[in-house]
Length: 244
Image (cartoon, rainbow, N blue to C red; front, top):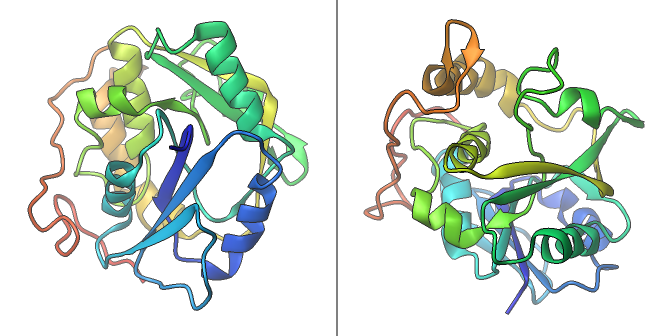
């Protein structure tokens, strides 16, 4: 059984093995669940599997989450490269400092953007306020807790469903920690999801859940609308977009 399950919407099949190879040096057992409408034309490693579905990106991620088996989960994309022993260091910090007795912990990787580690400044919901909630990226958290909270909200289209999950973990007393020892590198000019859907739908949707009078609150302003099991692999639920 894997200790960490990585999952997410992944359609850039040409990048998969580069991402996978960056994870191979870890001693921590892991699996990868890639979900989306592009099938690989090569054999996948034993601990990586693909689930085909034509539904919207955030629903692909929810499908991937539901297929995970590890105690800890990480939403990821296929356009990132993991630094040396990133999973080992995240797992060690989670297990050693907070232990599995405390499920309400999120430990986020750091990120390199254009060769610069901007994590301390940029991985915040309000980048002008260093005390605002942690904006976790390639983070590990408890699978059981995600299940208890109902998974991601189906009103998102492409992104920010995991950030909404982070806020919901904070809402029930959870904490977010930015690791010093786990690094990822974002590959440049790979994703169009942010410009295509996040700016116009997902970020305003997130704000409607958490922001009042320009202040990020501690309590969600409306109930979660979870995905339903029925037809989850074939029909996009909630707000829909066009994903090619």
